Length: 104
Image 1 (spheres, rainbow, N blue to C red):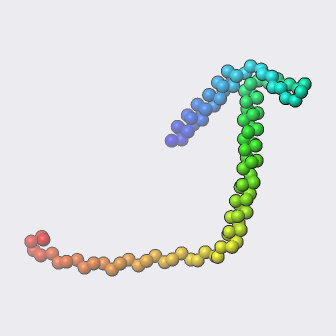
Image 2: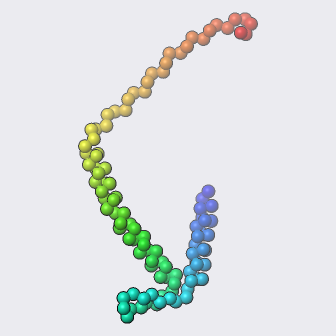
């Protein structure tokens, strides 16, 4: 199973390297008026992807903080946990009927 994971990782790296080589042409990114920036297309895509991940994590952060506060508030308000209940006793064994000489 570990070998399969390494093969998939290697395959992903090869695909990303192939993508970077195929998209190495220089593109111009226009920003504010009279501003332009030239960089390889793969770099521009990487920057856009990382910016999207960062913006997504920052948008998710208030929800995480709110949930952690609610969990700590609930933990403080909950009564202390009681000891786990004892295991129930096994039912009494049923008597075994005697076997007659005929095997019935």
